[in-house]
Length: 262
Image (tube, rainbow, N blue to C red; front, side, top):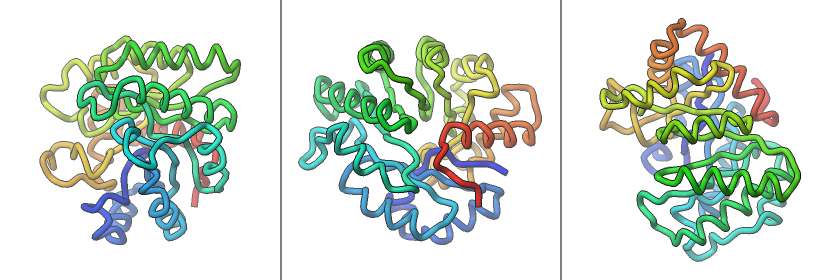
């Protein structure tokens, strides 16, 4: 049994065939999906999706790409109210993206802080997106943890950053999630970093419809493909696919406590 810890079932390329996408995942041995919200415009569709499928859970959050858009400014109080729904299992995805810089960095940082504060108050896990922003990601997480005086748990999603972010995240008690990037030929450094991450702190995801793993690279990704990332992870860690499936699934349910097995 596997879990896709991060996908986007509301995105158009998956939504048009969503019933079959979910069914193909089930047939591939994927027992649970976490469909991740990236903005308030998509929240209602997330709600509809998680009501439709017993084995799909959702999140609430605003991606750093969108926080400067109309209606996407959201406070910790807003997030906490929205997160009371029982199948909302996490807050995010949030974080910093300095690669594309689609929103001003100061606005990204403030939104990130609001999401962190909501997680500390609610106890829900934080889903972090960080691209070319390792230093500020680490700094803000540490500052908010210290200022709020509360425990914070979460995951560095679709990890492809420098080693320092993995090490700092692990020191905070976070999990590291790997996507199809792990299977790419040029991902030698990433595989080296992941080799050193303890098995009990790893998750697998697709980030579908993006980043399809080999042998599907360049195609629309979907949750069923998480098995290929899991197989690559097994190779990196020198263990069986069965052990990876068992461990990453256990890790997922440990982190996302609101998710129930069907």
